Image 1 (cartoon, rainbow, N blue to C red):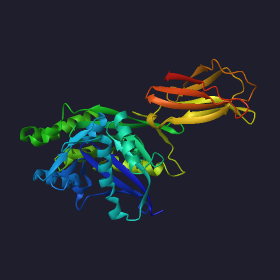
Image 2: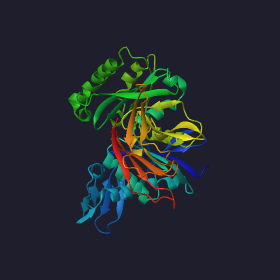
Image 3: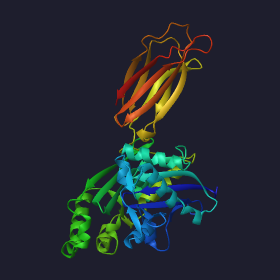
Image 4: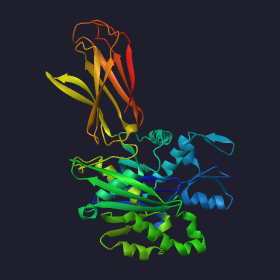
Length: 419
């Protein structure tokens, strides 16, 4: 078990963090580039030296570039999001290849801690669930031999969900709040649970205060003096009449001690914690959750996560059954199902779509127009379901005939369904 690594990876626009689950302490250990807490924040940059064209990453790339010894590549995160490449020393590099280089460099840090370790599961958290970015990440990881059976991509909000609910129960007896003060400004997230459901259903709401309290205020002497009052007013406003057990503070904006007095005042009736590794640690807890048999009794519903269960009708051992094609509380972009059926002669296929939150169900019928006439149970149907985006999936039904008895007509029925 010591060689099987559960990795949490927070892939941010500006900084990246990595953690590995410690099977002795049952907590994530954050992996750094060196000594000191600052080493845990790995700048999301690459560099190429001018003379030898050696690839660098993180602080080393920044240092070399500051001495004019290397070209700094800072925007490959956005390049991947926009599906574009980057030209370096006159040569075009795809965003996927740049991601692969960065992932290889950063994940190599694990070998210093676990020289014989092999990644059993890696969960990667991202700031934005953009399809182009997600696709590029999967492509880059697959080039490294890390396929989807060992890799999952989630939102930072879902990693926060896993982090909060992996703590002691008294810390999430009520709602849980998170203030994130980063280069993008201040945002507040509140995790709420519906305890009347089994399993319990959780979601995260967001309030954006970046226009009121932006990151540049930290470097302006006049505005910096106003920060404690401003943050205190914002905190009191969002927490007014809210029953919150615990507050977490994260982001470079909370570095130093300028907000310590406000943190202490917020401790009245609740617990307050400050840390920079919440998202990568949450992703690490998610990696453990996705590999153990005993699951925590929660379902997360947020951005990028399917709120529906989708199934098709069938029979097995003489009984009517439903075959699940898409599961709720999982990212829509990871939902893909294939199943082969033997037709009983039905002229249409029923697709059941259940909204877990609204407790509603709708049925979509797909006519199998033009199906060749054959005896019952002498037609094999291959059914595929795949999502196009968060609100649309396509279901395809292929006629595969029945071996040597009936040749396939090569007919395909396809329908795009909106949910």
